Image 1 (cartoon, rainbow, N blue to C red):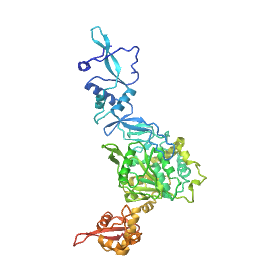
Image 2 (cartoon, rainbow, N blue to C red; image 1 turned 135 degrees about the horizontal axis):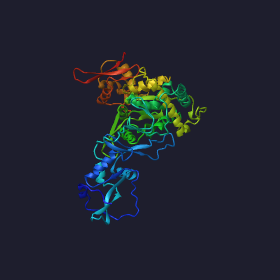
Image 3 (spheres, rainbow, N blue to C red; image 1 turned 180 degrees about the horizontal axis):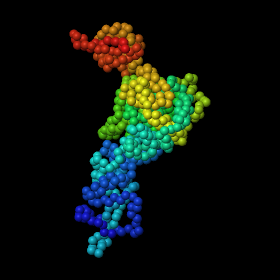
Length: 553
C-alpha cells in the first residue's frame, strides 16, 4: 500500500523506517477511533484534535487540567469504621496514562515503509503500524489550559443530589447540566418528582422511627440534627451553603456513635481518619490527604474521651469554600472545593476556640449501664443491616423520597431556626426540610454546644472571679498578677484554680504573658450571663488597662 503523502509529510518521514511485511496480521482498528501519527508538529496537532473529539472516553477538564475518570479497585468496606471512598477517581492525564488510554481505546498508528517492497514506479510502499506517540508528542498534546470541546467536571458525588435549579440528579455517570459525575456507592433507586402521600408517610416512619427510633438521643435536637446530617449531601448544592462540623458524642462507650457516622458515610463514600490532637501541622496534612481521594464524608472517629476539639486550621476549613495546601511529598500547592461532610465521634467531647460556633452537636445519652446489651430493636442488627448494600439502597430511596417531597412543596425554608453566621443558608434550608416533615428541635441544643466549649468555660470562670475579687474598674495586668501572687505556688494554682491558663495549662507568670492572653479575648463574650473584657489606655504611661463588664442585653 502506498501511503497518501503531502509535501510536508514527505520531508518529515525521512529517513525511512523499514519493517518486514507481516503475514495475515490484523490491524486492530475495527470499531475504535483511528489516530494517524505523522512526524513533527503534525503529530501534536493530530493527537490534540483526537482528544478534543473524545477519542478517549470519560475525559474531562477542571481548572484547565485534563482528567481521566477511572474505576478504583478495592473500595468495599467490611466494617463501620473502614474507609470506603467512591469507586471512581479523576486522574490527572499524564503522558504515561495517555499512552495507556490510547492503547486501550484507539488505534493509533503511523505509516512505515515495507522492507524490500516498492510500487511500479520504484517508490517504497507503506503499511500502517500501531504505535505509541513519542513522549515529547504526548506531553505537547496535553500541554495548555484551553480545552473548549472537553466537558467540564465540577465534582464527583456518591449519591443523587439536587442540582442548582432544584431538579434531582439521579442517573449515574456524567451530568452535563451540572458538570457532576455520579458514582454511587450502591445501586441508585429512581424516585418520582412528586412522591405519593403514602410513600412520604412510609419514608418518614422508617427514617425517624424504624431506623433512628431506638437510639438513646439526649434530646429532640440531637435527633433532628442527625437527620439534618443525613440529608445535607442532597441539599447543600442548591442552598450554596457551607456546612458545619457534626460532632457525634455520647456519655458512654458502645452507644452507637460510629454506627451513626456510618449510616451517612457509607452512602456518600467515607474516609475514616485519626484525630491528631493539637498538632496543627499534622491535621493540615490529614485534611489535604483526604481531598486527594474521592469521598463524600470524612470522619474523625473515636477521638479520645474528653478530648477538646480546638483547631484554627479546622475552623478555617469549615468556613472556606476551597481548601488550599501544599501537596504532600512536594512543593506544589493544591486547591480543592470543600464539598465534604466533616464528622467527629467520641465520648464526652469538648470544643474550643472557634469550633463551638462552627459545629452542631448530636449526642447520645444511655439511660442504663452497658448500652451494648440492650435488645428489642426495630432492626435487631443495625450494624450488619447497614453493611448490606441492598439495605443501603432502601435507606437511600426513603431519604430521596423525603427530599423530592420537600422540593415538590416549593423548598420551604425556616428562618426561625437559630442563625449560624456563615452556615445560616444551610440552617434555614435544612430547617425548612425538617419542619416540612414534622421533625422538631433542630439546633435547639446550641447552648449545650457552647457549654462544651472548654475555653469559653475557663474564661467565664476567670472573668467572674476577677469581677468578684477586683471589681469592675480598669486594672493593669501587673496588678492582676499581684492579686494572685500568693497562689502561684499552691497545688490548685492562684485564685484556687480559677486563674486563666494557656493551652498547656500554665498560669502566666509575667504581666507581658498575661497581657497577651487578655488582648486575645478583648470584646469577646463568655459565660451565661455573658461577661466581656473591655480595654482602654492609661493616660499617663500609655499601657493597656482591662476591665470586666457584664452584658446588659
